[in-house]
Image (cartoon, rainbow, N blue to C red):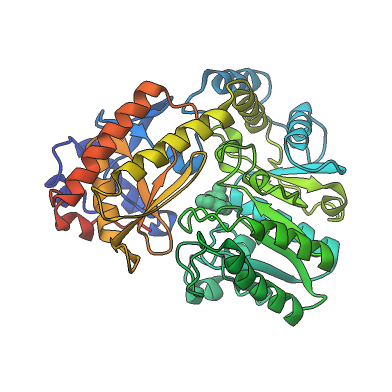
Length: 463
Ligand SMILES: Cc1ncc(COP(=O)(O)O)c(C=O)c1O
C-alpha cells in the first residue's frame, strides 16, 4: 500500500502506521491480506479502537465479526488472566483437562438438537470446516460435498476447495479437489434465474432446489455433505428465502447427507439468535463456529451429532493445541457475556434500527440498492442504477474511505465488492451507536457529493 500517496488525501496523522506498513510489506507475503486503509491498529476497548498514530475509531468491523462482546471485555480478560496464571495449556491429545470439557458442555447446551452431541476444537474457521468435512466423509463413506457459489469457507486445503469466492484457476492449481459441487445460493435480490426473491420466495426456492436435486441425482450415493452458511457473509450478507433451509434439511435427511451449518461469521448471537439457522427452525447435523467464539482468542468448534464426530478414527481431530485452555476459558466467558448481557436481544434491536436508518436515507442516496439485515448481521448493497441493480464498487469504497476519515471503521464485501459491511459489537453503547450513525451520515454525504477523490481508488485493494 502506497501510504505516502494516501497521506495526501487525509488530514489524519498516519506516519507511524506508515512505518509499520512498510515493514510489513518487507517481511509478510501479500497473500496474508486484502488491505483497506493505511492504519495499524494498536489498542482496543469496547467498541473503540485506536491506531498507532492515536486516531480513534468506532469499530463497525470488529476484526471481521470477532468482537461480538467488544474489545477487552473485562469478563474475557479476567478469564484469560486467571487461566494463564494457572496453566497456559497442556495438550489434551495425551492427557485430560477440564477446560475443553466445560466448553463442549456449554456449546452442546447452546446449539439446536436434542440428540447426543459432542464438540471438537481447533483454531480457525478454516480448520473447523475441514474437520466437519472430514467427519462427514468418514461417516458416510462418500466423497462429494455440495457447497455454494460465492461462499467463503477458509484457506486451509479442504476449506479452500469449497471456497468459491477465490478464482477457480488458482484454487485448482493449489488444491485440486474434484469432489466438490458448487450450486447457486438463492440471492433474493440478484440471481441468474431473474426471480424477484423478495416478492416470490417460493419460486426462488424452487429454482435453487432444482439445482440441488440435479446435483444429488448426478452424484447419487456419493454425496457426503451439504455445506452452507445460513447467511452468506463474505458473499455480501445474503439471506436465502425462508423455505430454502428447511427444504435442504428435508433432502439431506432423505439422502443421508450430512448437513453442515457453517456459522463461523453468523453465529454467537450476531443474528439476534445464538445461531442464525435458528431463524429457519432447522436442526443441522453439525455446526461450525469460530471468529466470535473466542472473544478475541483463536478457537474454532465443530458441534453436533456424536455418531458423526465419533466416526473419525483417532487422531483425525487431534492438534497439539486442541481445546487450548486459555482460548477455552475466553470462549466460556464470551458465552456467559452473550447470555448475561442479553446480547441476542440487543443485536436484534440495534440491527433493526440500523436497517431502518438506511431505509429512511434511501431516497436521499440513490446508490442504496438493497438493505439486508438480521440482527447485527448486515450488508448494504451500493449500486449505480437501482433499476438495473448495477454494482458500484467505487462508490462503496468511497463511502468506507469517508467513514474511515471520520473515525468509523467499516469495509466492503460481496461478489462485486460493492456491499457495505456493518458489524459493530453487539453490546455497543447507545452513545457510540448514535455517534456512529452521525459519522455514517457524513460519510454518505461526502461520497455522494463528490468530496471523496477518485485518486483513493487506485490505492484501496478491497474485496
Ligand atoms: C463464513 C466463514 N467461514 C470461514 C471463514 C474462515 O475463518 P478463518 O479465517 O478464521 O479461518 C470465514 C472467514 O472470514 C468466514 O467468514
